[in-house]
Length: 272
Figure (cartoon, helix red, strand yellow):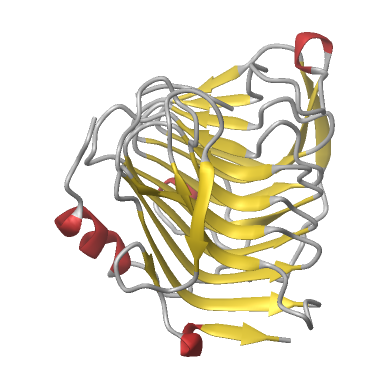
């Protein structure tokens, strides 16, 4: 998933999203209420689909759309469920769009793309394809928010961050994955990026919770209320630092809290 986009300063934007990381729960909303209420179930509750819809062409979304627990599965040109680069998404969200109560089944193609600030409320990926969702914003003040939901069976990344801005993941669960979040390691145009992860449960097997380009772009990751399950030897890396690049392969440069790029304390992590 190597894709483009400029260096930004992020203190104010990051503080703003951190103030909104409270745990929220709600009963499944109706189509009418989804436009005004937070539609978030407890992260432990995997929903059953009410219906299944085959998607042969990317569905564009603007404004607010509640899918009422419809399972969307790719077919035809969207029938890929592997790691082939450059697949189209099942859903493509315009700047300012919100989707809620949707299940991405399999084949999943490249999941969901966001073209700017967007919100995914109570979205579930049953079998992640190329990626579950990709943030393709164009400005440093844009934010992609994952609020509620879950993902499983991600051979590589769950969430991919290609543009600038801040990526927020909260009230979420993931199991059997490579990386929950990755700041693009090899994009033709690189940026400073920021990720906030709060109240998330990760279940082994998995590699990294977040992967960021600490150098030379100064990415930051802030982790709070992370629960790690079935990882007694603590092999899952909470915050993996890389040297990002525009070509070649990004090199690992270390891991763990440093108060600058990987921001968390031991009390923010619970092992079960």
